[in-house]
Amino acid sequence: MRVAVYAVGKMKAGPERELAERYFDRFSKAGSALGFEFTGVSEITESRGGSAEQRKADEAGRLFEALDNGAALILLDERGRELGSESFAAELGRIRDGGKRQLILAIGGPDGHDPQLRNRADLVLAMGKMTWPHQLARILIAEQLYRAATILSGHPYHRV
Image 1: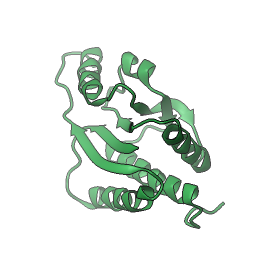
Image 2 (image 1 turned 45 degrees about the horizontal axis):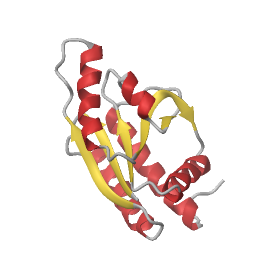
Image 3 (image 1 turned 90 degrees about the vertical axis):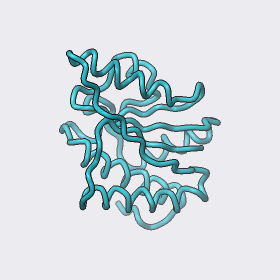
């Protein structure tokens, strides 16, 4: 299953980008044996629409263009479900084993996600109740993807 991250906003060079790339690289290597092909991060420029609703709709439209018909979609949103790392790993395994060819994890812009995108999502996932800047959200999801791959493979990286 191809796995991609779509993020509204650009991440500048620096330690945050390097850390995210390190975990995405680890996920790419660990996940390939498990049927996960990491295809990278696509950065979507923030919309310049006049209202929050217009900006969310513009950003959602660009993400809808990237979704295959049968793709799974996980939105990152502080109002979503909170899962532990083992439950997140199980969700990834369930999506993969369900025959999905593509999984997109989407990090929204400052205004959040469009309601149509939320309705289309297979899972709306919260990384806790706090709101995180997109740079930190990217690091968090990168690390959790790597952690999920280690959990699914039985690697001792994840300890409880």
